[in-house]
Image (cartoon, rainbow, N blue to C red; front, side, top):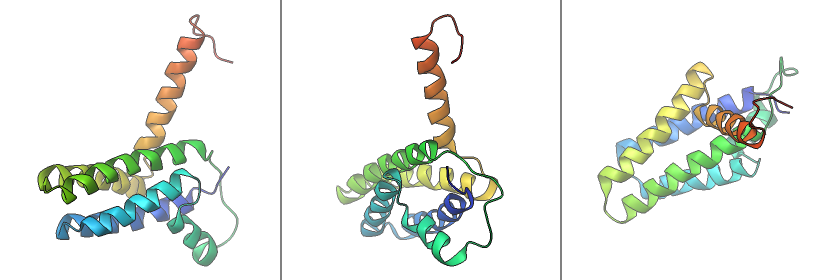
Length: 139
């Protein structure tokens, strides 16, 4: 279980980074964000760690499970990798669209606390649980 304020802070930083990528078309910056997403998928988002080390004040008012957030970081990684490869290959439109999709999700999480990747994770979990138990009963 983790304090959700760290991932929200990370979403704000990610939003800023991806906005700069959209404005500059920087393949290198998008690749760096892909590394951050990869670390986040492994449970070590550097932005959230910065928040925890330097900005956190007081105990968490609530805790959330880490698995959905890690999945969301993996989804972000996928979009960042698509964008990085596309920008590097000269497919600017594809690269910027992938970046814009990741930016939209990050902004939605940062501003409103709606984590699309987390929601996708939960829907997949529910669907696979239902398929494993066709009677619809939950464990």
